[in-house]
Length: 147
Image 1 (tube, one colour):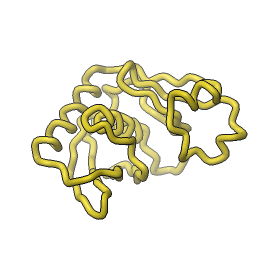
Image 2 (image 1 turned 180 degrees about the horizontal axis):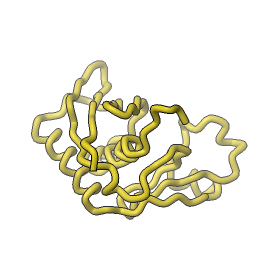
Image 3 (image 1 turned 90 degrees about the vertical axis):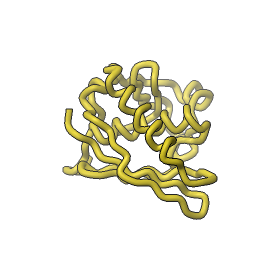
């Protein structure tokens, strides 16, 4: 991991992705830049978000943080992971026999090799700082305020 890697910000990305999936039925982000001070996620989408939708997504993520879900990892056989998750972006998935799955309570589960907090409450307060929409791509920029 790079020296600027931030487990809280990375964990917040997971919660944001699940909030988007639940609220809009879209896929998880296809591109993300996660930095300690500010981050962004890009989604295939059909329009800009309204102010109300931005507020609702922010509230969804903050509710998941406040729920204080435990963050645990488990190993899942490839065959099972292929049935549950979209593994399209995983390089070399044909050679992988087990995937590391990160679970945040019952809120989110996703194959991931990154470092995470041990509980969602450790993430701090989530704030969407801006959004943009261009050529079928919705970008959501966000920051965290320490717990």
